[in-house]
Length: 374
Ligand SMILES: Cc1ncc(COP(=O)(O)O)c(C=O)c1O
Image 1: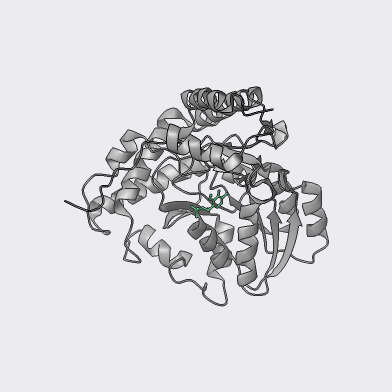
Image 2: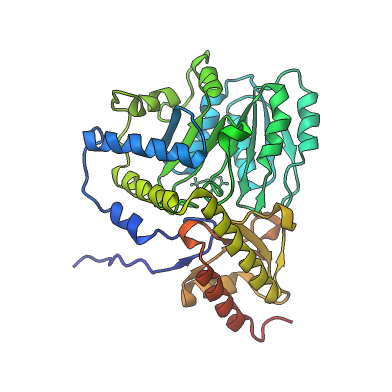
């Protein structure tokens, strides 16, 4: 008899990810192991690559997954695109934009920041001023869905601002791809990455990423190889190119699961998924406002997949969140930065984005808040 009995609780996951994994995806992940160069696995990788192009809305040849969490894809993008001395403009309007800033500092680039207060998007005018003040810019980056605040960035408009500078545009869609409208090629975005565990509702561990021809050209013309061997795009590409060879051991069962998650996305349709997420988010705003919560973000900038809601006066944030989790099996996340102890972050990602879960959250909170709020 093992000392530890593996019995994870069945939670309603309404946090910033991971989201709930549907039964079909879990079942796919339990199929038999094969070798990382088994012909059946190589065939699957090709199918997944096509599915990812459909998800990113891109024709990019260099579309693949990085074996690792979303941060690995972020690091892959930055490590491959940047060489010391490059000029980079990093937009920071929350925790994950700041994580990118930290990576640029390690990459020893000439770094320029465009910031916005937490809870607001980057102002395209501010980005334009910064770009106009620089002789040349190699790369601009921004987070599409800031999970720390619940703000969605209008990337289409930012891309128009970036275009005349000739810089490459890198966008983080870890919390938004598959849940919120994003059109890689139409908007002119060069590099986009996401994670398997949020709006796609596959297990964590694979991070889809896509590179435009322009971005690949820049990488091929590097004077020095990227710092990371594991995240080197050209080395990873050998595993995804025709006649694949060993680079690292692929995440076999997670790839099965990701494939099935992408099947579900295709069956529902991208645009239907975006619409379902928006509609469910509207219900969430209404239900939380009924209970006395206040939305942090202005309606036009709200990220449907993640809502930051300020708690009603008199509620003890952390104990209430703990009660929700341990007594009612509902996970939500606490606020970050200045909002710690004052706000919750409620996610509606992929399979977790269901109206019945919003109704359940509302029912439980109505009960818990009785007599607590003033
Ligand atoms: C917007 C955004 N970027 C990057 C990440 C990092 O992803 P991971 O935690 O999978 O490394 C997250 C994770 O929450 C995120 O929300």
